[in-house]
Length: 538
Image (tube, rainbow, N blue to C red; front, side):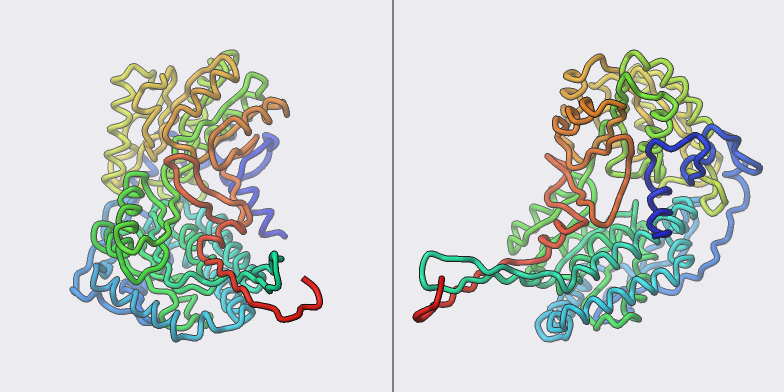
């Protein structure tokens, strides 16, 4: 219970009192404290803190063993604080995917995993969750080192959520069952919910371990085997977690991990003729490619969790201070590298000017620096490519006539840090209001009435999530039903729970992850019809 409350406090923001202590309120209305930075370069130019973890696993994991890539190639994974190399990782490609798929097929067709009782599978997943919890600090350090997110976020939010997700799916393992169906005639009809087979999975770099859990947890609970490709930017934590799963008793070949690049390893998984199911999280453009490859190969079913341009709507009755804090969190959380970030902040014209001034002040107080330092809210962006992309979008905002209230440049003189940036007077046709920036850039737009903001919020190819901030239940009900998105958060944002389904409308994806709904991605339904002779009843 205590763990659940801690996670809830850390990962969501709602109507909290101004004095509430939360990881994401540090650096807000209170003073930053010693050693933290308000747009100074001190935090970014200090010698980076050395992580208290050793990189042990850099190879591919195939058939229960860590092995080199067939080609012998490696690629560097970088520390986003400096751009320095952390380690060289085995670079998997199509030949390695073939090896992994063969191991997964053998484990599914002939191995013990799908033939175990559901209770036995459950116990292995629970032991794995216990090991994740035991190695919380090592997993968190690898996540922050490879990704750049604050260590406090990794250690206090994301690893506990990893643990919670695996325990949640372990709980489902022995509760998956079919139905007995009445038929018109002397027949006994039952449905079987069967594992789909070998699941191919491709995960992104922004939440490496959480996406690992969203994909691997339900697949294993349903009795499938897995070939998963990690993002080339962040391979370290999934390799460590996979080692712990095998320590918990996972049989060889059930979980195979390929580190590599999308056009080679990712494409090989998507198009593989012996992979029965595909799940992908990433950009909408790449999602289209993945879907096409899956269709052109063996027509494998595909689950897609893609991009977003989520509206965050601040209504005229809002408490402006609370709205500013929640809108700030909705956009800047995880360095803005969140598919459901509230990246279009719609504010009612009656409170617009006050909101803009306070949003600017809040951004200026945001604590930016080495993510291993206590109290830091924002670390570096993932890599040079993303860093340059964000700065290009900022230049576009200035050139298109939006008002740059604060930020707009790199932070410090090393690494991939970007200043928390706020634009006002943003128009719907500006690129910064249409494209998924995936960075710490808040765009504030004004609106006059509900009909107007509903139309504008929905006028996008995306439909992943939305936020609504209001004191009126009628306003909340109107907006939640009108917004064409997969999740609407009312007076909160980024409230993630293992049981809450997540996924998008329109070009934000297909299918749902998390919760009971995610199990359907990894099961097939078989109808079994048996003729009855002289039944006592029908």
